[in-house]
Image (cartoon, rainbow, N blue to C red; front, top):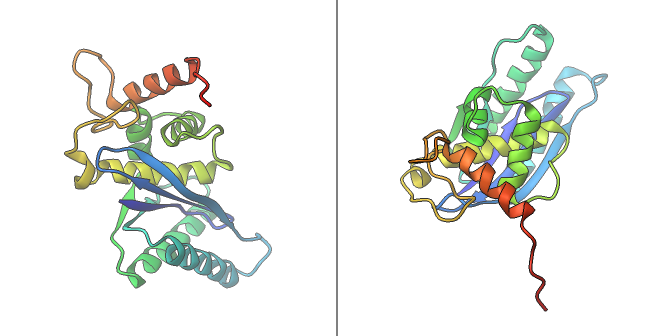
Length: 204
């Protein structure tokens, strides 16, 4: 399945697209950030985000869209901008009749790292390892969008019932692996660390 993840924001709106197989292997398709200048009129900023999302959805044609659920923050202006962009993202999905789901940051962190209170750097590091990237996608909005897409794919019925296949294809990320004392996501992290540390044989 192809999932387009959206980390809503008025100044920076992260968008990440991944393909995920039935056995939970994720592959990067695209990642970007839609930016609008703070000095621009609000209606024009929202229009810019809307046009950017429409173009990306049209280009990548996702099977599903995942959006970060808006939650309360101390900065009211930030919450308002995030909520407005979330509405635009929901509308963009509805126009194309694409199923859309909302995920809280805690849900995403738990799915990706096995710990719902993980720091952004931990999430970014795990996203890079899951997708086989040499660097963490930047800015953080880009990595968060990819994390949303992976989280949604892993939680979907299409992959939830699949048996794991390979070190980076965990089962339900929050479930403990028998005899290991770790969650599936934590097992994936350990496997990725081993793979990164292991010497690679050169082939001609």
